[in-house]
Image 1 (tube, rainbow, N blue to C red):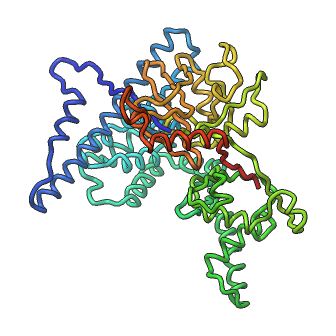
Image 2: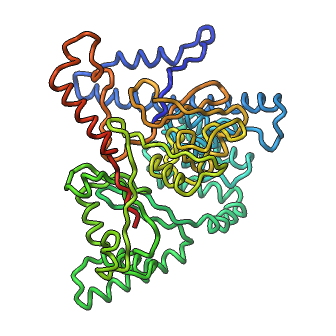
Length: 484
């Protein structure tokens, strides 16, 4: 995924300094020659980052107000005013849409309700993260109470000089509780409704399975796993306590020691990786890139392929799906359909191609299959006109002023994998290119194209490359998608 776009600079008001001028000034700064000077530079640059964050907050609030005025003039219902604003801010800041919403909320709180915290951010006494902590811990208060707590803490007077995150959180909670204990108590009661389980990648083919639970339930779960691990250790199990707790969690939730419960997973790798021991990494949807050897070991340890599974008496079955890619570019071969809805085969195709939400900077799980050019505007149900999106991005794309269209390649590159252009109501365009599948080797097309009439067009290396491409095209090089 990418979100490349041409640099944009708003017209500078008379006597003001353009953002580009500031960037040029920073580019001219060179490290000092002495250690004390280097530390001073680091501190000054950190202060500049905080000041920039404060200015971004003011700009975000101004942009939100301008967009709401425009939408109101266009007749947008009052309940829908502000739709798509957070997504535009996210794209401009190269952040995910969810992060854009939090940044807009932070900006509104700082600018309209917490002037002392905003000033502390502007002067470098707080960084953006610690300002976020103060905003978060006072979110349950009314605007008046939040402003009163902001004045009580007075972060711009150096209240939090040398304080760590925990100290700041404790001070904000204490002040909030003193101002409105009922709201703080209600917030604690409401927090139980936000319990959830999430999964995110970790290094070395590991992942973090995280559960946000009420404290009583969380302690009960941890205690049960601890006792289970202690009993096994006492019985002589050689595994470490942490390993036993993790294995016990998997077995208790899935009912099987290995955690395989008949749920389909997809492992995408090249035919060379699968059958010839190639080192090209594979891709596991929902996780990301995994080593080739690990992928092969997973197949060997979890089951057999096709009819061999029944012969070996293995309950788990693994089968092959062939995904054909264009030689040299890695673009998947299109699968067309005349249907209004994406059929199951095409849905699997788009999931394998896009991996996560195709909105620039968004890596949320796929929830919707979307027509890039809407069906109502003549868009076809094809792989070229299809894109996998998360639910929030799909709804944002349908907001007035947003448009999208397929592109042959991303701006500024020679990649020709599936790409799309997203244009926001302000006219800014962002580009998203499908991630490369295993086995894709992107080359510089300009370097490969021989000059007209030059000897390079008949060089042995070029002829060898052409023969190689013809062979690869004939084989319709396949990336093997294994679904367990």
